[in-house]
Image (cartoon, rainbow, N blue to C red; front, side, top):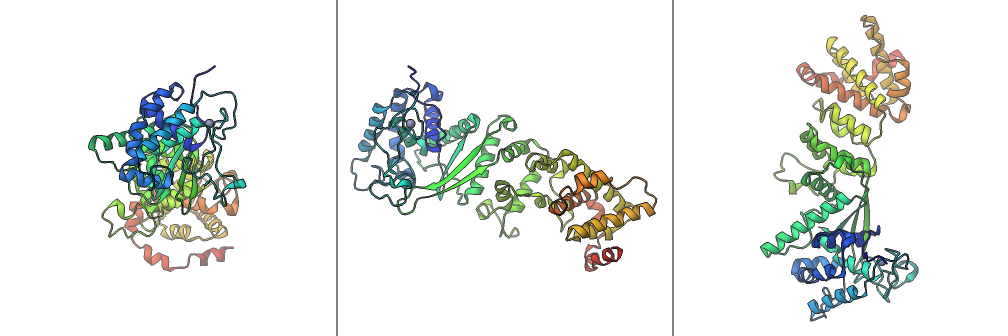
Length: 451
Ligand SMILES: [Zn+2]
C-alpha cells in the first residue's frame, strides 16, 4: 500500500495547507511523512499565539484553544490537537467519506473552530442540511490548520487557490520568506498584509507580485486562479469568490516584458475611481479605491476606453499592446484587428492630408451606429471626389470585420479607430489647436442632410 499522505484535493483550505507544509519542510507534497508534519508544530503554535497572528486567527478558527479566552494553557492545548490529528493520519487509500480528499474516512466531524465556514456544533441555523459540522478526515483537517500560513490579510482573509503548481509554489515561497523575516526580526506581524482593504485590487497586486518576483515563463502557464475572501468570524461569517479568467492572467503575465509596460501602469491608474490626482502624494491614498480596469477584467467587460484619452487626443499603450489585449482577453479575430487598424491608418492619412479636423471631430462625436456609418460614407465620397483611388474599406471588410454585429460592436470599432488616429496624429492634432472651437458645431447636422 502506498505511504503517500497528501495529494491535492481541490479544496482551497486543504490545498493551501499542503503547499504550506511542503514549502516549510522543503519536500514535494507526495514525499511528506508524519515526522514532517510534527516538525512544524512548534513554529506554528508559537506564531499563532503571537498577538497579531492570533488576531488573524479570530477570523479563521474562532473558539479554538488559541482564540478561546477561557483556555489557559493555549500552547499545550493547541499542540495537543495537532499531535492527535497527526496520530490519526493514515496514507491515502482508494476511497473514503472525507468530503475533501475522498480517499480516507472521517473519525470526528469538524466544526468551524477547525475548518473555516463549517458548522457550529449545536448552532446549526445557517449551515446547509442543518448538520453540525463537515466531514474531513484527520489528514485534511491537519492540513487546514496550516493554511493560515499562506493567507493574506485584507480586512477579511484572502486565500488563493490555483491548479498551477508554479502559482502555488511561488505564492507559498513568498509567504515563507515573509514569515522567516518575522522570525529573524522577532517582529511577528501576522498573515501577509500590504494594507489592502479592497480584495479585487489586492488580488491583482498579488498576481503582479508573483509574476514580477519570480523568473518563470508565466505566459506559458494556463492557470485557473480563484481567490476566496472570507471571514469565519463568529458574529458574521462571509465569503466572496473571485475567479481570475485564464486569458486575463496570461495577458498580465505578458505585459511586464512589453516595452509599453510603464504605459500599462498608467492605464491601470486611469481605472481608479474618485481620485483627485492633483492632490495624491502616495499609493496608499488611492490603492483601495474601486478600479474599473480591474473590475472589468474580472467581469469580462472591455477596458478599451482606458487605452484612449479623448481629451488629450492620446492613445496609451500603443497598438501592439492593445491588439494583444484584444486577441488574448477579448478573443477578437486577428483579421478584424488588422482591418480596423488599416481603416484607422487611411482615415489618419485623409484627415492630415486634407487638414480635415471637422471629420475627426465627427468621428469622435458620433453617438450611434447610424451616425457613425454615415460619417464613414461621407468620407468615402470625399475621398473619391479628391481622386483617392484605394477604397477606405471593402464590402467584405465592412460586413465581416468593421461591424460584424452591427449595433452591438460599432462603439468598439469607433474607439479602436480613434485610438489608431490619435496614435498616428496626436502631435499634428494638438498643433491644429482649435478643438474647442470645432466642438461647438453640431456634427450631426451635415450627416442628416446627406441621409
Ligand atoms: Zn481527507
